[in-house]
Length: 250
Image (cartoon, rainbow, N blue to C red; front, side, top):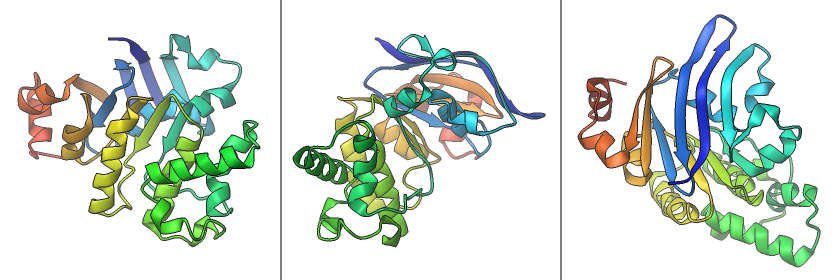
């Protein structure tokens, strides 16, 4: 099984606060990799290390290696290229003050795509993948910030997909989205893993159970256990993992 992302002895602190402690973890290519654990266990920090959005936090100190395709991301000269390769969707929508269309077309334009027909097709494809096209196809020139919260979150997902990333990081993507739409997006994610590696942070343990091929359980800034999802949910090696996936705490 080919590894796409590798964490080797990674520790992260914010000042005196430890966020991740000595994490070593491998994420296979073209799979959905679930990351579960209680709040403040380091899950979001882990995602931010992959595309170096951790750099935006002045107090953050990162030790160890994070590799994508065998390259240490902290040694890459072009961090912008890395962030085009690694799409990121955070828990709450972050809309650009642009139209729905331009929210999705912005990154492709920056990357040099200007052909209107290609842009139109890409925008439609991404909005369909985000299960948003049918709701906005007649108001593509409306400001994205005028959409409902759930629609804005799906617009954020469409924008992340517009980069045509090789890795898609999802951090609690469904918090603002209704359950029916969430299930439709989950179906899309199962198809998308044929094209990209998906790293899914979720507090909904059953979402990880439904979607993830492999799952890692974090607690108190530490990696407690990782393995095939079915094993993690039925016969985990650690009692703490079993307690979490069965609702014993969290």
